[in-house]
Length: 386
Image (tube, rainbow, N blue to C red; front, top):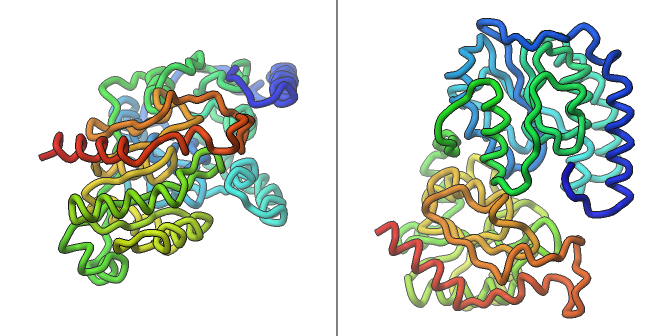
């Protein structure tokens, strides 16, 4: 079981796993066969973060090649639907805003309550589609119980990341030292998947007119860099003043205009960068769909990002990436790309809480990363690509 932020969470997880083990004969009493039928119906579950969805694309084609399923569906958060929808290996996307992941995304209590009410319908839908194989890539006990156990698939595949081994027919022993892409591939390999994992997000299709509305003529003609430097937690963000200084350096040295990307929650930070910078900065945070964001990233000269969804999306569409890490571990969640550099001051820096317990104050690990080091990394990825 993974290391958790608090003793209380770990005790709760152990208790939940013990209860699941005790109820296993009831939850899966008719599902004892581990044989995979020909032309099987397969459900892949990845309903957590946007970056995790992008990394999960590494197993889509390999799963189809290995199993030759009649159906390969994906259960995903609505925010990640464009990652899977239209993928040649995917037949259908079942959207579900899991309330436990909505909480992590800052959803209101009302929205989370509505999603809890929607949960039984989603479980019934999974059961009604009579999947032969169900795969949870996260190794989340809640998802293993609800969508693998109650979902009724005879073959249930996941890791024991937070428990649930007793409910699985194929269980991978969680190894925290591996990258998230490697973890996904290791779980899929239990079903015969082989090869070298690579991210596989279909090229986005956004019309020239819409792209012109998003990215200015100046940015298109001079080239632009994407900045995604506001993290989901305070201790994962790079200060706006640093980001503005970086934008100015990139403009003066390379001529690049800067474009800020992110969710609606990142819009204020993008405004701060645009206000503080002396060079042109366009703030698109909260103003793009995922497909539009992918198009912007695909055309960028380089993306400079903290550990976040945009970082993984940039890697997925082949944009060079400079990734800034503090409390996160780049060995587990760094950009999966050969055109990437990681910048840190000893990540993971040991700051586990959302703010930080260090005497220097919240976000110290990220503030310690200086602009000159980031510029050096940008030079390196651009030189490697030229």
